[in-house]
Length: 111
Image (cartoon, rainbow, N blue to C red; front, side):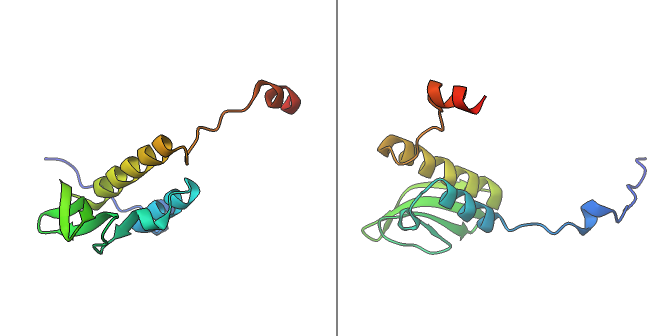
């Protein structure tokens, strides 16, 4: 029989969990992904949407009153991770999100 894990009540127990939505929004802002490109917990035509569904969470493109390319996820974190990946890939394709690559001259100046 496994032994019970004691509740240490240490620093980890006191640390408050940051909402996944807040983390996603901060990352999207840092990546310069326009807020009009996505909608959270609401359906907006022309946006990639994340909504709670009957069996977890759904991510889909809303267009003309219909849901396209619906993906279902059992947990919130997976849905947000997928949504961010799709948005970031689109930003890279459009040239909005570029890799942070220093030029050779800039590297030598920092040394």
